[in-house]
Length: 112
Image 1 (cartoon, rainbow, N blue to C red):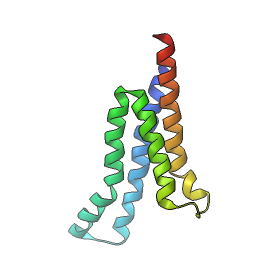
Image 2 (image 1 turned 135 degrees about the vertical axis):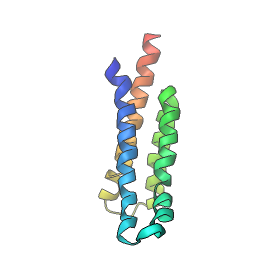
Image 3 (image 1 turned 45 degrees about the vertical axis):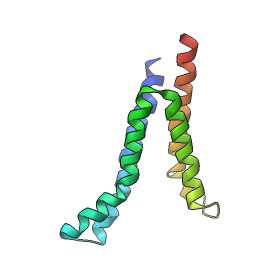
């Protein structure tokens, strides 16, 4: 199924874009050239996730492991004492993409 192949890849790129939007908050605090460095620092998670997307593009199992790990790491970094919305916004999309990579990996094993 082509949809099962492409859905986690497209959603993972969308997730990188979604996380990149959070970096735009530096423009409310800085102006001019002093914005560049904080903006790049805020984009580090997006760059890391983009590297993971490129790795996961070739190997669904690795995508499953890395995306599910990032989902759990985010929960542990934030802590368990936050409102549920803290987890839904970032951890849930990571878990969904992870699940889709896993489903595609299972499907590919069945057809081969």
